[in-house]
Length: 473
Ligand code: HEM
Image (cartoon, rainbow, N blue to C red; front, side, top):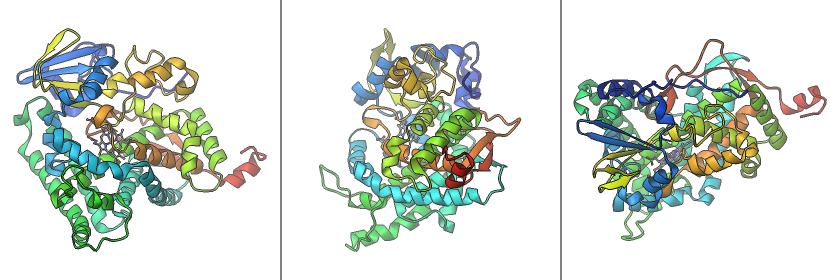
């Protein structure tokens, strides 16, 4: 029997428009109903809003990949993110997006990932040190630690400095405020009910965005000016790659504001998503002690007492499958919103120009027909034991999206997550806290509405374990 994490119980029937809006305002997953997990395609119509949800793999491929140019990113989400991210790669379309993607791609090439690894290792070591200082078996909200370590990694890989100084802490705190308010702006905008946004929320969101951008500008300005003056420092970080990037058509570089937009976007996309996934992975492992024990054994066998290096990442197969399965059950980006640029037909329905087309990995990856075997259960072995799951993986697993807008940081995220999970499992054992059941809510990413509290036990060093267990480890 596999562990099934709690998730928002779908309604029996579709909610009416206004009820749907008020449910979605708390968490968009609360607006879903039972058929949402079975249908190939669904639709919602409200005054000023035509929304189509597509689950069928062929339609999903059409929207995200084959006809991606006809389904640009919806402006609705961009509106809520604009004060912080400006016109960043996450929200732009057409030629503007293409220029940004071409200029940012090299920072995430394979060779750059190898350069980023030591920075990821250093942040992981700092995390292990923080955890080692905790009393054995004590209770902690692991979401806080996972947010800290992933923010530290993205900070080090962008700027080559650890996230320890006061400014970095202030950026981190302002991001947390921004993230808490964002859904209250985003959901009314998706439902075309902007007048329901409280002016106070709008003001607080803009104030947090101004503070973050001001702090980022302070870090970026000296490097930007030095580069302009031909005095570039010997850094091999993401910022350096962005400073050196040139538009392949015009040969122009990123302007200062453009640079700040991309860095703000990377900071958000680069830690919020990974923190969400790692937190859920620990929740799932704590509740599946047999899987946790096997993943621990894999880490001990592969690593012994040394740090994770690049060649380990491939060898840690169960750890990678744990992460894969976590991304299936709790995709950090639960839905993608696109806009139909022209009228088109989908499953014999006429979709008008301007309609919102939504692809939701949350639904597709728990779809009753696309994942016929225990779709809500945590079973990382399905990818090795079950041929139909491997087919589902190909057809209906898209936590990083697909097509031209596929996540730029997917390989970065996989490297970081495998490193963090293997390091954590080698040194610690995680146990659920009696009576505490995390409740998933759909905000900027899928997070727990009541934290993810776990007991953190320390494991004995590998050699001591080997002696204790008669050398079995
Ligand atoms: C588990 C971690 C992550 C997940 C699940 C994830 C997921 C996604 C998804 C689904 C998209 C596309 C959204 C859409 O089409 O509407 C996306 C875009 C993006 N992600 Fe990630 N992401 C993760 C980590 C990262 C990291 C670590 C970075 C950078 C360091 C990153 C950078 C980006 C960028 C730049 C884009 C925009 C790409 C474009 O539009 O061309 N992501 N991500």
